[in-house]
Image 1 (cartoon, helix red, strand yellow):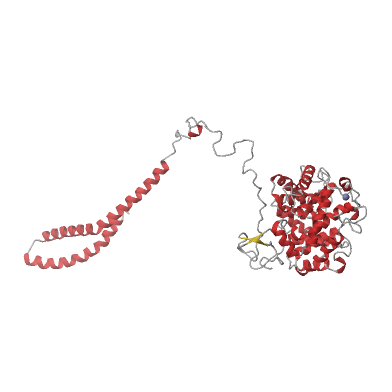
Image 2 (image 1 turned 90 degrees about the vertical axis):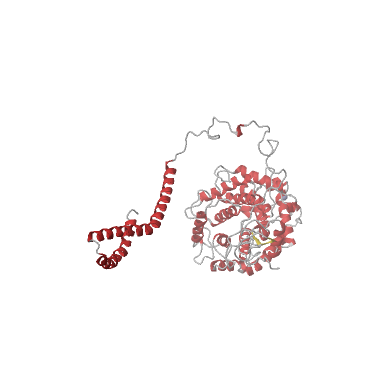
Amino acid sequence: MATQPTDYARGNAHPARMLAPVIRQSRYGTVESERVPWFLIILALTVSLAVNAAVLSSMLLIPFTGSTSDSQQKDLTVIKGDVEDEVKKDDLTNDEEGLNPAVPSNLNMERVEPVTVPGTEKKDEAPGIPGAPEARPVNIPPPPGIGNLGTGGGIDSLIKGKGSTVGTPGGVTDILMRAGGFGGRSGSTRQQMLEEYGGTKASEAAVGMGLQWLARHQAPDGHWSLDNFRVYGQCNCTESGQNQDIAATAFGVLPFLGAGETHKGNPDSKGKYQKTVDKALRYLILKQSASGDFSSGSAEMYAHGLAAIAICEAYGLTSDPRLKGPAQRAINFIVHSQSRQGGWSYNAPCTGHDTSVGGWELMALKSGQMAGLEVPSSTIERAKKWLDDVAEPDGSQYAYQFRGQQISRSTCAVGLLCREYIQWGPRNPSLRKGVKHLLEPDNLPGKQRDMYYYYYATQVMHHFGGEAWQRWNPLMRDYLVATQDKGTTPKHQHQRGSWDPAGDVWKIQGGRLMVTSLSVLTLEVYYRHLPLYRRDMGGGKK
Ligand SMILES: [Zn+2]
């Protein structure tokens, strides 16, 4: 900046030099005519040049130098301000009110009321609105497919106004409930599911009678027994199974939960089984070890998986905070006992994999997920390895412990249901082939009694939907309705509502209690789990 005026002066000097010869030429003529001495002419010329240059420079340069000095002034002002801010330091000796504990503030004022905000007058009373119902569990919409139905799903509700913002069906006006979730177990949704999926009055009556039989055989402390149920029923009902009270209690309570009966009561039935479920849940929680194991530390995964499903479902249905800890611990125990091969075996810590046990564990994990509990995605990912290990190369059939073993239709159904829940969509060719296998004449309901197989296969078909379900459902439903004990067996009227396990593959292990439980659960398939795929759901279809 300091050189700028000089530069401008130099620039302006050129016109002055050009003017000089012109002046000189005219002065020559003037000098010659007036005869003025040369030194005077040179003096006058020098003075004139100096004055002209000074005037011209001042006229041209004043605006520039003026503005330059102004901006310099501004720059200086800004810099000066910054420097001042940096230099300024907090006054650490500040004794403003609130900073100095010695200075009293308005919070130290004497209270004239026992509380500072409006609240309960009785200290022992729980906060909140007395008598208000607890919040219903929140249904989280599944990830919507964009454009197509995709493999994730949920159902369209009759209640408009909530739901996913993307994808069809669902869209912006329909509620979407979590695929496979518990949202269909009561109220209008249950009625809709029954109608759309082929339940009947007879099948619902069979469920009702089944629940009555189960309730009549519960022990006073809330548990059920596979072998001693007649002691608690004070009856002569036949067909005991083997001793396993944890599994029996899960088998006992699951059909109630499947029908939407919880320890909080069900408005649909006016809380008919509220105490039954409450006692069962209390019993199970009492038996849970600190590690989360429900089998009292004996780590029997089969029993634990079943009990875990019950607790997770009860939590998912009620959001009761008292169940959250036991349910999460039950999930954690399954997570921690998973074998290196990705599956589960009879006892924890698990080695290798047993498809039957694994099926219960995986269903417990999915129930936990549906209830909003934490289930590591890595556990689910590793479970796929177990399924791959026991599957036939085409993925349609599943062995009990390793590929190459004799294939059983039960383990096929378990494997396919697991695939539906964690991996495959309805267009998967392996799933389609597997479903076709389950629909072969010998595997259809009623051909060979196998309630455990029916329970899983019915769920596979329910989620798969379409023609497979249309074929399977009437056979399964009517078979169960027909074979239920109607209380007409001479001298054994107490068996009314149960299913005789005679001829069933699992008669010895599970007896009447397990077969009855699985039969009721199978008849609850319409609403117990919302379908994983939405192929048949009729949002707008009627
Ligand atoms: Zn009985």
